Amino acid sequence: MKKIDFYFDFGSPYSYLAHTQIKKFEKETGEKVNYMPVLVGGLHKLAGITAPAFIPLKAKYLIKDCKLWADKYKVKYQFNRYFPIKTLNLMRAALVAEKDNFFRSFVDKAFNAIWVDSMNMNDEEVFLKFIKNQDVNADLFSLKYNDPVIKNDLIKRTNDSFDKGVFGVPTFIVNGKMFWGQDRLDFALNEAKK
View (spheres, rainbow, N blue to C red):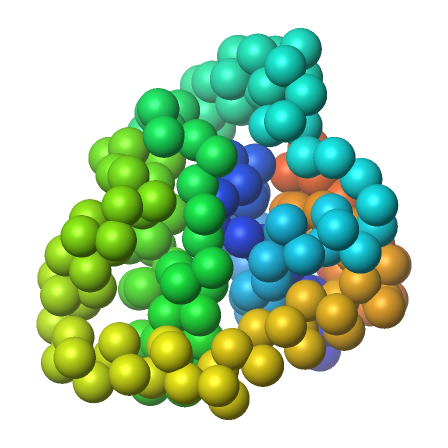
């Protein structure tokens, strides 16, 4: 069995695009992909780099580039007009979903909320409404994602990923080899098939 880790942040359109290809990736390799939630802002800070969203020329290009990839993959996609999205609470919520055994469906819904439905997850009311629509006890869920254990777990996962060489998302690590960017999926796939 091969170890395939997918490091992502919901606020990254390229993470969304990579996510849309995971089922195909798993089918072609016969292997399960491990989703690894991290904070891309934390990775950028640790690496001392500026996110493309904050570099005007890159941000402008990113909008066009994501559309090209979405068309290539034939997936629904809408650049979120509220970008950049602050995903701290959403990433913490993903860890709760992971512990409560509805992680993959939560990931699907969160990515779609941002990159298909263009929801403003920067708005706490919108975020809380999204949480309430997850068929969970929203009050209990809120307590869980605000728990210091969850907060520290997300920080630890981000730091641990950086220690492995991850500096941005999406990143795949296949049997110890790193592939950064959703446009490197083919290389990760080839490695997974070896």
